[in-house]
Figure 1 (tube, rainbow, N blue to C red):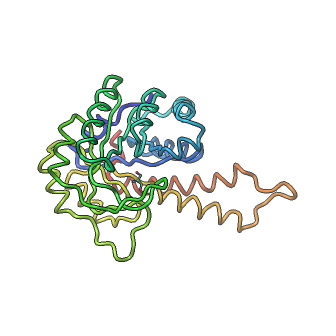
Figure 2 (cartoon, rainbow, N blue to C red):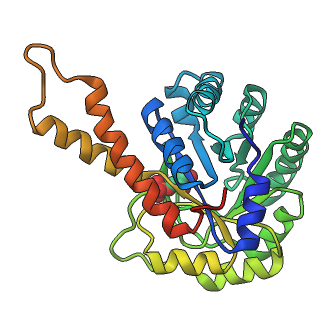
Figure 3 (cartoon, rainbow, N blue to C red):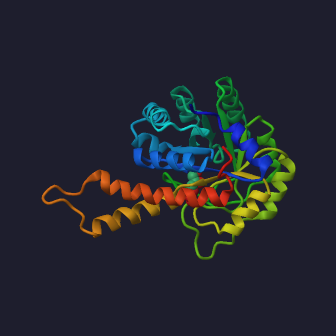
Length: 287
Ligand code: 13P
């Protein structure tokens, strides 16, 4: 059964570890992530961007697929199905479709409008037992065509949004989606510390988990980060493994490649990436 991400993240914050949000794009990714979480006895959050939701044939299809897998694979660890960077409209679509968690990305609105819309969505989500993440300060890089700068959030604005009743909060601290440029200045721990001092027990979320050095991840967790999002790293691992399979010429005489074998190699690569992240984040055995 899908669960809200609130309880698992409150526990993570109190226990000084982080739960990984791994974005899904198809059946193979979803299955690989769920199996790894079960094997490692770790809670997990499946992230779905609006683009990925559209690709996978809409949110009700995603909910059906994930619920089916939880049943068929005998998954017993806590699993949250979470809308990643949701617009106002899509938050409602996911609440209706049966997601157990949503993120409202109102960071591009003026703060007053972000606050008003967040408040309304908090009430709608909580009425159905669904957790909600809000964002303050745009996360840099490109995600689904949306380009952000990688700014640092204003700690006072973070407190104002946290006080609206959201369950966890993404705050920009110089993090970027995708690969970090060579001249990246690193995470602003000063900003993170100021945010955590003002927001207390609120679990904080670190987007752009790909390519952040292990020591920075550990420091961020020590300063209140309880959820870390990873997408690009799974994508790179999947692409490398499937490319290798094709380059090895494992095609069948006159029948092309066996899609299941090709994707099985991609899935194995995702499993290895997810395992490495769960170990780094400290969520292994915490289900
Ligand atoms: P990366 O693609 O950099 O891992 O970021 C993922 C993310 O933050 C999804 O919201």
